[in-house]
Image (cartoon, rainbow, N blue to C red):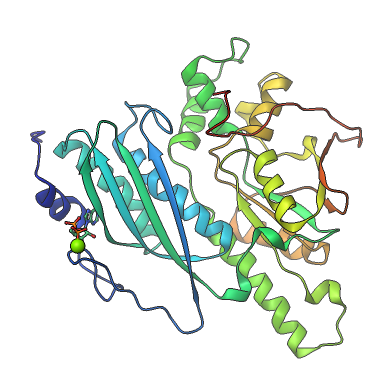
Length: 350
Ligand code: ADP
Ligand code: MG
């Protein structure tokens, strides 16, 4: 393909305008128009990817298109929302056809998987590639997986495996000289975790459904014990590292937690690494986009069955308690001191 520069409107038409499916009005007017079904509320989230900050300049454009949407869908998953539509604000130094074709391929491949429609956006020139997506989803108001929903005694769970994305970043940067060598397959796997994360939408929807079922059970039998009827899950997607993200739940829910660091799920590639790297990656590595969620121990068995039906590992890593703060322990319940904090764009450490 000839990699010729394009003008703004040709670019939007060629790469970002597709036949309208769900929106009442899509790309091409001053605003898009959407119907909101009567029983639902809109969940709205924005996430930006900036060249040099969130991705390397040579990153594969197709994977970048995927990731720009995936990080937003991950926020919808963490709220228990069903993705419906998104907008794309795109800033580019140059409009190259080959790059745009690959980027939009990656973007729409993921969008189509969730029937999530691009309904508008903005396109401008800027010195660095900047991708800002706003994603919209539907969730019944009472079923949303809010950060303030954790309760004393709840189990804490995480999906999938933690730390591979951080390990890949360290590998690219040659950051840790004592990092153990990995096979070609293991490297491909950790790079994929960094560059092409998969939002845990099905899990988020299932957890929101659990909340709905618990409410319905309460309406059917108001005498049932409160532990079974007040059940609601709190959830967050792990974008900045488990410690920091779980702390957001604890602060919003005004409670504390004890986490068994030996129960943190990780890949074979990460298990090959020295213990300090394993801990750093699982506790403070971001970018995995797994869900960390809390749930009453009365639904433990339901969650174990959910893991089977979704073919997604769900690991019970600790418990919510009343004492504020996050305590880390090992398998033998001995306290573990860990001083690294999670990622913060405005802290001094990179
Ligand atoms: P306005 O000047 O009214 O903001 P624009 O000229 O910026 O509109 O955009 C024209 C149309 O193209 C709008 O409907 C807008 O939502 C859409 N659009 C612009 N950039 C993108 C993009 N990157 N992806 C999808 N739609 C876009
Ligand atoms: Mg306008």
